[in-house]
Length: 537
Ligand code: PLP
Image (cartoon, rainbow, N blue to C red; front, side, top):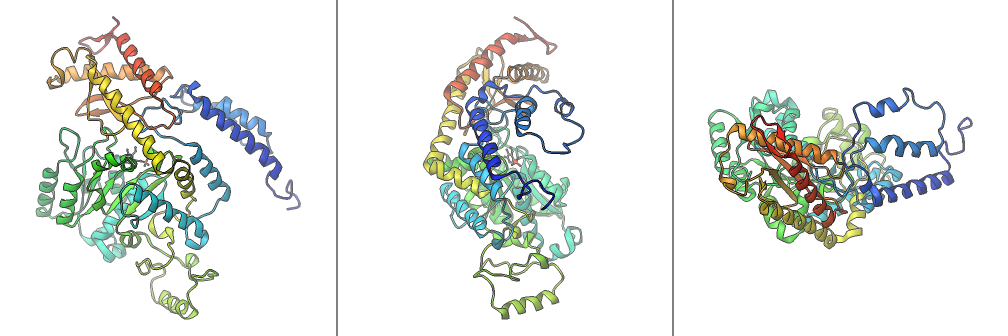
């Protein structure tokens, strides 16, 4: 320590207090005033790279310079996800309680890989996930585990599905040696993370069968049944259906109860991707839209989407934790919890001795028994070993708002979306392109649509291209304004604007302002010409 500046080797506690106070003030000001920033960054590629020095600092730099650079260099390069008029993708919130939870999480810096590496981290995770399960209408005994993203939760879920299909043989000898050609079913509206999981798990794109959707973008169950039957005849081994509750493009909900019937009769693992809409089940009248999800083998729900929790927080629920554990448990000597235990869970010496002899007889790293009879070691239920104390964020958010507070906020987002949808429906120059069950509105500008033919019109490919060009232009102009940020999708070849409401600080006035802006920008575009180029009116 002698050559370190200061006894702590770190900044001093007093200096920490000063800087933390500064930073918290900065954050409070940011949250109050971030409407003043353009929502979508106007940065050009390389702007920040050019502004930052090639080499890092050799010695300490003054704190004031660092925070000054946050304003000067970083803010212009940010797209403000915490902005109340961020309506793109799925709008989210780093709420104040969630931010404080994240701060404490980083300060404590515990790693909850094993129960004993921080018992409170494991048990808080168990408890808050049981609260959430109860609030969304799932049995509170449902096993839950936190990951960083829905992509990882889904990867773990499909790994468990594969484990259920292949068993110990698959684990020992791998998928290729099993000789099975596994097939997973998803709809053409499911999120790309499902297929990505299949790629990573050796299922391959050929092993993913894409099922069509009905007019409301919900998986077609008859087609699913037929596909499974056909695949069995052709020598495939169907193993998993991945259904969606709240699809990314439109928030459609697949017919979960009917899909659960198929999964049960075919003995397939049912995974439900409720990354976005799972949170809506806190609202009783919305929960009914998800009926059937309680029969899934696994469910993903992202608090960082619609539960006001900073990014990096996804829940994987499963009714079959023993299978998830079979898929992931691998305990090397240096991670054994039963050695060097100083806690009340320490096994008697005789048991420890038996385990050691078993370990000596078994391969170096093998799964141990799957029954969960003691404290949970969460490292056994996923890919990562190191695990941040994510549940703190949820605990802070849940205790700050309460269940009823979450319900009220989610319901108000759904109401705002319904009101916007009604305005779009009433406007003769706009058309809605999908139902609005939650807080996302999909629509496009199509001047004159309400005057004559309405939705029934069969447009030619050229017409569609023209409307797409017009709406792309509208989207660019809206986003360039800095006042709002919307994103897009394509629905049956039609270019659609997506207006997603999900930020805590979004008000009716924000939505009204955005709708005014959409109308005025659209009017200024003029009508599309036959070449697809717009002519100013
Ligand atoms: N599933 C759905 C339905 C989504 O909409 C998304 C992202 O928007 C994901 C999964 C992936 O989420 P994540 O970014 O947490 O991996």
